[in-house]
Image (cartoon, rainbow, N blue to C red):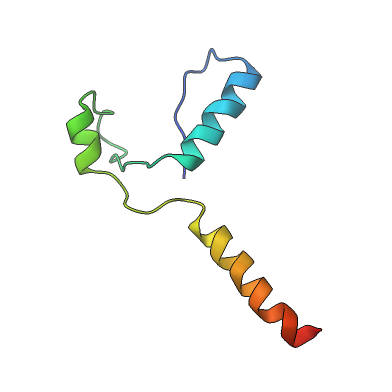
Length: 70
């Protein structure tokens, strides 16, 4: 996943932008096309899952496996 942001941002703003990017829904843009300006187009090409779901799933697996280990 690649979070696009302005290159003139300070490091702290860059970190904030990456954090927001991981929490909010993202949308797919072909590498050869331009980033859409319209929110409607962005919504239509939205990826319908949150990026942090794999981390939550791994945490759940860990806690389910923990009683077996103990």
